[in-house]
Length: 334
Image (cartoon, rainbow, N blue to C red):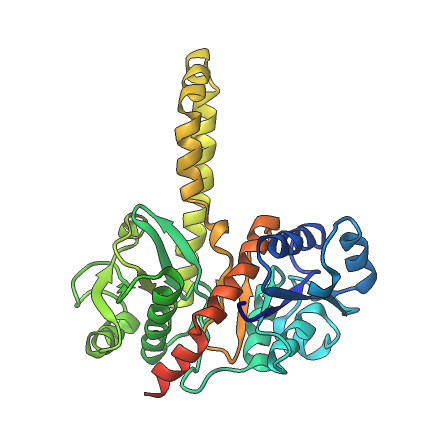
């Protein structure tokens, strides 16, 4: 029998908390027998939601947290002053070794700050990046960093590349994944100072399969498995990616519904379109891990529904089974 993976779950964070968070928790437990959940938040609220479901009570513990960190709050102040919040309590469970991972759809800033201040960074990691999986024509790519370090230096990007390569190889089962850096052209002389100074470091790094620069337009076509960038550019790419997908879906739907011929065509194309959209649904891969910490912290979308919460919890199991943190620690210390 597989070792039980203990996951702390923030019940109070996100636009759809607590209902979708609890629903996702129950769905995760229904899909596997090797996870135990520590659900953090206002106990009476959690128990009211749990009462709607049938589940093995031995697999869920409630951790009472009377405070909630709101999205608009300054992250550092919130982490320091709201010590009885669901985010702080969940992170402390990881810090103290009670849990293997923490999952939250709450305040990104508080999770990023709390992850580094409370859980702490691995030796050799000065900045912990967020690394979401994004859909491409060839399957899935890893974007690192997408929002945690807007003032990264060349050395930080080198470490991001190493950690991203390890994570992708073990999570996706791809040996020696390709690694590229986001640039405004393929030529080495192009780019800003950060990119120009980082490229030589990546070329000299024997731990990764570096293939050079990648332009943003090449990302959707799967030009690289691991895409390295600093957080400002990474976040712009991610948000444009998400926005463009919603825009195109809206325009397709509008076009199909604009005439009788379009509606008939829509009925014919619906099965194929549904399958294609499923292939591009990133919620099935869970949230974005904050790599380089002494334990796993996963940030899911603020708008997460149950399916993304469920898959983020299952993602923690993969992370532990593949010993990804141990492999990152070993690589960075060698």
